[in-house]
Amino acid sequence: MSSSTLSRPAVNAVSAPAVRKNKKVRPATMEPRWLKITLLLLAIGFLTIFLLVPLVAVFTEALKKGWALYLEAIIDADALSAMKLTLIAAGIAVPLNLIFGVAASWAIAKFEFRGKSVLLTLIDLPFSVSPVISGLMYVLLFGAQGWFGDWLREHDIKILFAVPGIVLATIFVTFPFVARELIPLMQAQGSEEEEAALVLGASGWQTFWHVTLPNIKWGLLYGVILCNARAMGEFGAVSVVSGHIRGQTNTMPLQVEILYNEYNFVAAFAVASLLTLLALLTLALKSIVEWRTNENRLQAIAELPEQIA
Amino acid sequence: MAFEKPQQSTRRRVIPGFQLSLGITLLYLGLIVLIPLSAVFANTFSMSWEHFWETVSSDRVLASYRLTFGASFLAALINVFFGGIVAWVLVRYSFPGKRLIDALVDLPFALPTAVAGITLATLYAPNGWLGSLLQPLGIKVAFTPLGVLVALTFIGLPFVVRTVQPVLEEVEKELEEAALSLGANHWQTFGRVIFPTILPALLTGFALAFARATGEYGSVIFIAGNMPMVSEITPLFMITKLEQYDYAGATAIAVVMLILSFIMLLTINALQAWTRSRQTQGRTR
Image 1 (cartoon, rainbow over the protein chains, first blue to last red):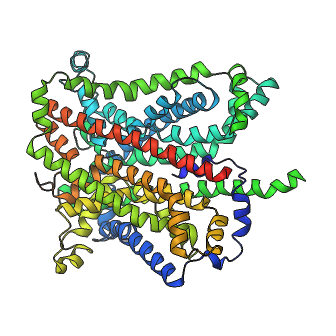
Image 2 (image 1 turned 180 degrees about the horizontal axis):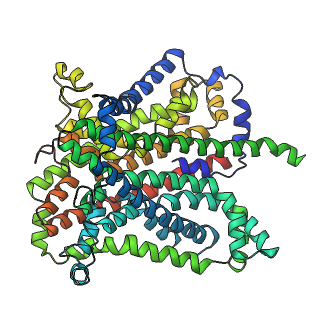
Image 3 (image 1 turned 135 degrees about the vertical axis):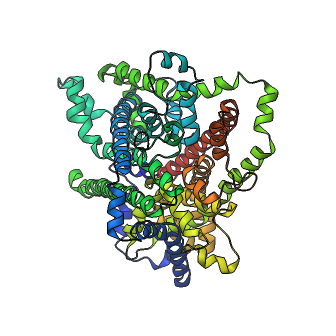
């Protein structure tokens, strides 16, 4: 996936000639014109039906009855409290997964130890678990019949059908995002720069803040953007643990579901349009980070001959 | 990468923070992932084997497996075909709006599944933009198994594109030119030079899309109609069990799904290792 573009070493022997050649026209390896046009039409047709039409439909449906009703749906008290809860959940889940991601990639990229590949697989695990099962796990742990159910009741602590449960489910489904962006990036960068800093007398934390962090900042940002998008948009896992209490345990995606099921389509799509704007913002930021990383790479390649000379 | 080997023996002594970083990693992994997941497995041990087997092989569950895995398989196939073409077009051709389209491919990753669900359901409903076009042809999408297929195709769309794209970028022009100048035609060059190079990536993309689709919930439930035996997916059936407070039943089905996803995860890891070895082989050649 896109992580491989980030993880590739900055100076790549293979892509250097390829970059120079892109400027020339290569008729020999080009397909016949009719084939090229057919492929283009197929690709664009497929993407139009599956991506563009739904995207336009969200906003059309939201504004079907005009801006007044749209705004009314957004400043509705339940909608606002759903927004607040979504921000809280993401605001806790993203920083925690960020700290974990940095710690995990430091341990995995800078050191050799046994069981590393098992650890890597375990970190990826939440991606392959169905959202419904992610929620179910916490029901089994904290529900009335769950492992900690009696203890929680005695101490009057509510996790399930309350904010803590929603936060936990959100953390679980967004668990791997930062780590899986950073691990390949830090592995590709090696530890020569850190070693140099340490030999010159920097402390471990100084090395991390002044050497490692500037090197991984784009990858970090990339992971945080993806993590945040999923944290704010998660539906299945949160739906199982939330209990759907209006104004209290409804996140924005759950609010969308409730409104839709009540046939309040304009309001449902109004809230959905906010989530769609968030998705578009995510894509825009993601593309900017990708272009930035690519430019850095091309620049490094362009500067290469001078350095050698 | 080979030149990094000799340094690994000294690395342990120079760089600090091994215990701290690994400690945080293992603690967090244990609390967030391992303990909750083991709760699912531990809970099934309280069931008798007969009860477990009865639950996971009832007619209604079997029908939901067939729909979930069948539709996921078809959706992943559709994505291999169109995703392969999209990757090809994005890597090989230049056309106006290419950057925009490239960025838009990730929309299914970024768009919350509930939003995708209600939008697809509205579009393909008999009075929706796409549903009203298909209605005269006698094709019903919303509230049928076909709707499940549409939703799963949508959420699996980026996987094949994003795994094939980087591999296609690295296909060496020299090899293609050599094949062409030695007298191979375009189809032969594609079949013998390009296709073998991108095959591991295509399979990885297929497996990723398939694995994601089997667990999908949010984007499917709105468009599926959720009729038992007909258009009810397995994740929804688990929810139904939970809502009836049949925790044991829901857990039993969850265990079956978890084991299947672990098998898929291992397959995907093996496929990705294969893709990487193909790529590095290409580089060193």
